[in-house]
Image 1 (cartoon, helix red, strand yellow):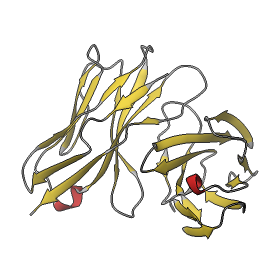
Image 2 (cartoon, helix red, strand yellow; image 1 turned 180 degrees about the horizontal axis):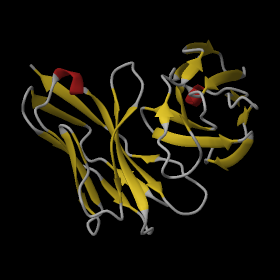
Image 3 (tube, chains in turn red, purple; image 1 turned 135 degrees about the horizontal axis):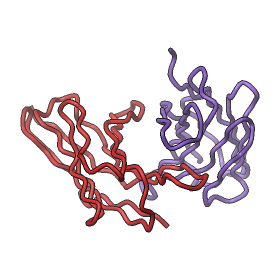
Image 4 (cartoon, one colour; image 1 turned 180 degrees about the vertical axis):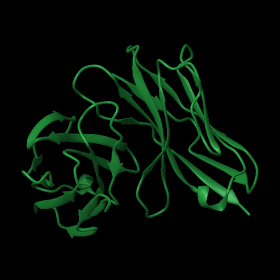
Length: 116
Length: 114
């Protein structure tokens, strides 16, 4: 079974600074997708960024980028120029490509606080 | 385009009762998945529906059930509620079940079992 581990329950960052959230996963699959979702307090979860495992190039979305290390099964999220609106719970998630079950497997989350 | 809507947003029930939660996907989306979010277990997959058929089910007891209607709206039902069923229940919709289709989440239904 696939597992996703986020070892940092909480992180904090100063506004305008850079922060990196860690995620490791375990799978025997070779083709899969990885995601970072953001869940602001009392608001719905939204997709921040996704990475296809077959792509070597790390995904980037504006201030958000990932460091995908397939051999190490590591998938960290870097947030540059942090803003107050980035404060949220961040979830790392895995979804396999093959078969018929496309469920998301989530980590336990990292609560990010942004200090002004 | 309206997002995923879930009703009700908050619900309080007592042990032994049953509850039905509703999810309306984004217009045109035909796949609906349900997740349970608790502080202890995190986010766990409940089930997925596509074209009124349950395609996949997570590791939850039979007290948890669901269905999907012809307009893609979905409901989930929990019978004989237990204290441990207190959670945020999230619904996510996508165009279809495939891996390339992004899942869009609703705001959730907060269920409290007393």
